[in-house]
Amino acid sequence: MKQADRSFPLPYFKINKNFTVQYFSKEANILCGTPDNLLDVVDEESVDKVKKWVAPELHNSALEVHLKPLNGELGPLTADMYVTWNNDLYAEVLFIVKDEKLTKVTNTLDQLRSRLNETNFELLEEKEKLEEAIEQNNKLSAPFIELTNDTALIPLFGDLTSEKMQTVEDYLLQSSQKEDIDQLLFDFTAVGEMNREGIHVLANMMTSLFYMGIEIIVIGVKPKQAKQLYELNVPLEVKFLHSLQQAISKYCS
Image: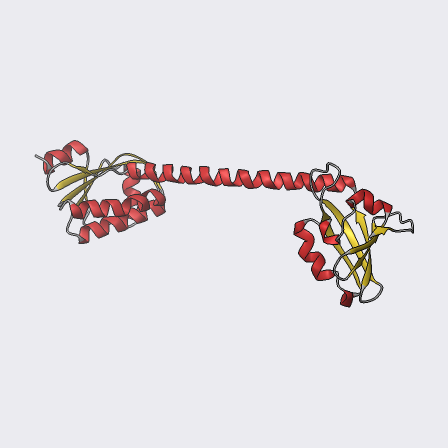
C-alpha cells in the first residue's frame, strides 16, 4: 500500500475485491489515516451496506456511508461514496464528506432524538403512575361499608363517570356476594355531575345486584339526578329514600 502518485482533490482509494487498500491520496490520508482495509475507515453501522453495494458485478455504485471519527471528531462523518470497478479485481473509491454544518445538524438531531427517547420513557412512567393514582381514587370513590350483617352502605363521591363505575363494579359485586348482603344503600349525597355512560354502567350494576337477590335503596338523590336516573332506565325495583338517616332508621334499627 502506498500513497497515490496522482493528486486528487478528494479522498481517493484504490482497493481490491477484498477491500484491501492498494493506493490512497493525500486527502484520504488526512481524512482516514493509513488503513490497510477500506472497511477499517467505515463506521460499523455502514459496514454491511458497503459489503453489499461495493462489488465487481455492480460496476458502479453510489451510496451514503458513515466514516469513523478522526482527529477529535465527536461522531461519525457522513459522506457520499462513489465506486468504479476497473475490472473484477480492482476498484477506485472517492469519498465526498458532507458539509460540516450538515454533520453538526445531524449530530444535534441524534442528541435530540436520544433526549426525546429518554423524555418519552419518563413521561410513560409518569403516565402509568397517574393512571394508578386515578384508579385508586376511583376505588375510594365508592367504598363498601357494612352497617349490619345484611345491610351495607356505598357512599358515592365526586362525578359519576363510566371509568369510575367500571373500576368499582367488580369490587362491589364481589363484596356484596361475599358478605351475604340483603340490602345495599347507594348514597348520592356527595355525587357531583353524572354523565350518561356513568349512569348506564351504574344501572347495569344495580340490575346485576337485583338478580343476585339484593334489595337496592338509593338515597340523597337531587331532583336533577332523579330525572337523569329515570331517563336512563334505572331498574324499577330500586327504592328511593330521602336521606341516609331515614335509611339507617329503617334498615339498621
